[in-house]
Length: 135
Image (tube, rainbow, N blue to C red; front, top):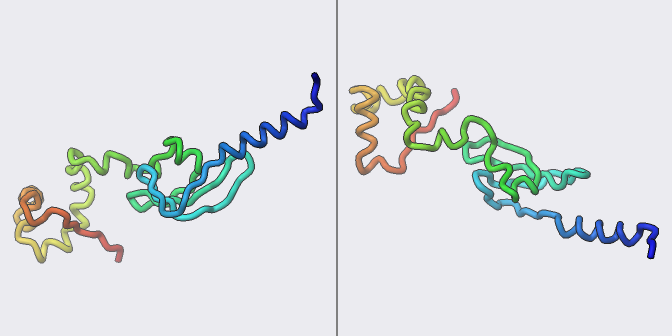
């Protein structure tokens, strides 16, 4: 039995509706936090605004978020910046920024960056951080 194609179109349309991926604002997927729905694009699906753990903003498709193709913003904040073994490279980048702030207030810092690093490994420093402020 031949068909005009209407039935096939209805079946395909029904399958497409089932494949629609929905994400709620505030949902955390990998390193991205979904902030809000932006728009629905033809043939691309829903686009969401997300914030990476590093603070960068990225707009991405819902299907990419759900499948795991997009896990973070894609900048250098990736996994390298979060691993403890990479602390020396991060340290050297931020050392000059911290000089002005810490030199006046920290005895450990005055002894040198290595002494300061050893000091912050002791109990009492866990969970504390030094924020860099833009002037």
